[in-house]
Image: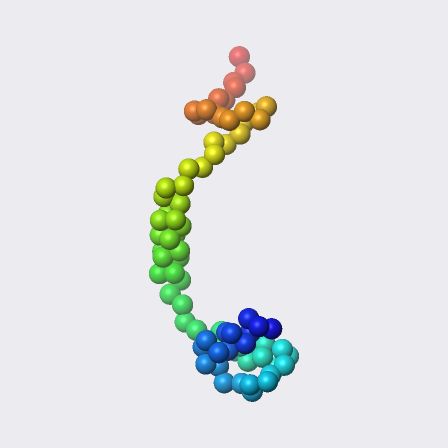
Amino acid sequence: MAVLRKYRRHFGVPSPAVAAKDELVPTLFRHFDTIEVEEEEVLGKFLSTLRERHAGVERPAPKGKGGKAARGKARVRTKK
């Protein structure tokens, strides 16, 4: 309920000050549907942020069979 009130306050959505959850939800859904979003721009910024945040992060090596860390390329067995 607190999140709904914060959303209403942040975006200035007109509704009664002491509105019940049943009153706020439909009002906020209507408001949310009116917001226009440039999907390509948002996705581009999201991916850019991910790259920046994980640029200096070391990741553990993936584990192969036997619980040991895999090294190099995976080996493919072929029938002879």
